[in-house]
Amino acid sequence: MKKKTVALFMTVVMTAAMISGCGSTAASEGTSASAEETPEAETEAAEATEENTATEENAEGGASYKVGIVQFVDDASLNQIESAIEAELDAKAAELGVTFNYSDYTYNGQADSTTLNQIATELIASEVDIIVPIATPAAMIMQNATADNQIPVVFSAVSDPVGAGLVASLDAPGSNITGTSDALNTDAVMDLMFAANPDIKKVGLLYNKSEDASKAPIEAAKAYCEAKGVEVIEKTGTTNDEIALAADALIAAGAEAVFTPTDNTVMTAELAIYEKFIDAGIPHYAGADSFALNGAFLGFGVNYVDLGTATADMVADILVNGADPASTPVVTLDNGIATVNTDTAEAIGLDYSMFESMCAEVKETVTAEEFE
Image 1 (cartoon, one colour):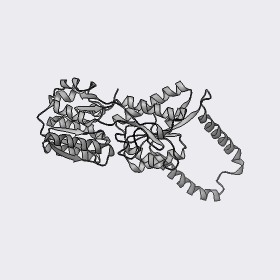
Image 2: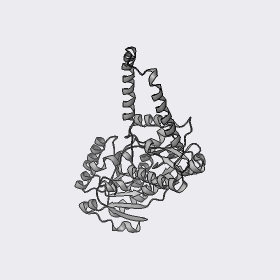
Image 3: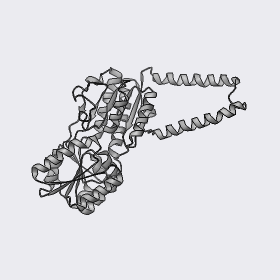
Image 4: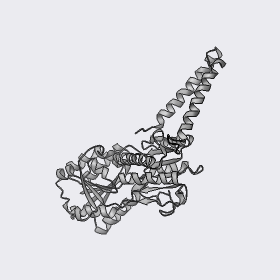
């Protein structure tokens, strides 16, 4: 799997510019390329033309498509989705007799909007046939970048596509963009929290308030707790260090359980904070299985391999079959899978046997950085 960052691209561009500037002096001294070198240049140009032609058709003469994949940030959830997208694109390519070239157009935005905008510019310049942003912030930037050129966009792992302004409706997106949603059933997560401990009086909410994916679930969690007469303690952060401080603040404030939605900022910080909650005896409930993999007590939601696979299927349908993104409904997978970290459950002494009757499935995991 090949991931790019535009930092390298920009460095190359700047270096080329510096060399070009120095070369002007060299040219005046007779050290620049002469007319006698033209045949070599023509050969290189011919080879480049042949290479470009080769990208248009695969070995069997089938069509070839450039697929840009843009991951918002490097974390277990999004890595899992990206791997599933690539695996399914390979499978679909073999099935349909086409080529999906994604390896040359796969980028990681490192949770930086400037980087993501540069990636968008690079993908458009590369004339990709479709862009696949993973997570809401990446999807929003790719949507803006393709407003004029109308390059199809198929997003993955966007929790609230309508609320984020990406689509007009789930059934009829209405423009050049559609995709898959990992919408979270917040009430179901809270039900599990109070089933494990009915006597909770204080619930902590840990999230990045600037992430659109977190807004609706946090409001739902507040409403749930208010209906139960349970106090809510909110702590937020936009960086790993701020999330760590927010976790400390929740512990100090006496939170008895903590909820986090499908928040990428907290996800990237989970390995740094899960032991804080374990030491305090506080279960952390979150909106994706990868949180549990990284140490949280429980992750709840969709199967991200299935989500990535569905995303790739939509890409193939649009590119090969000519499906129109504007009328292609957003795919929302049924959630209801609870992933419990058995290491953490044992450390805090929390029984979760009652979850079996409350979920479509209960999976168990142990603390690690990535899924096997």
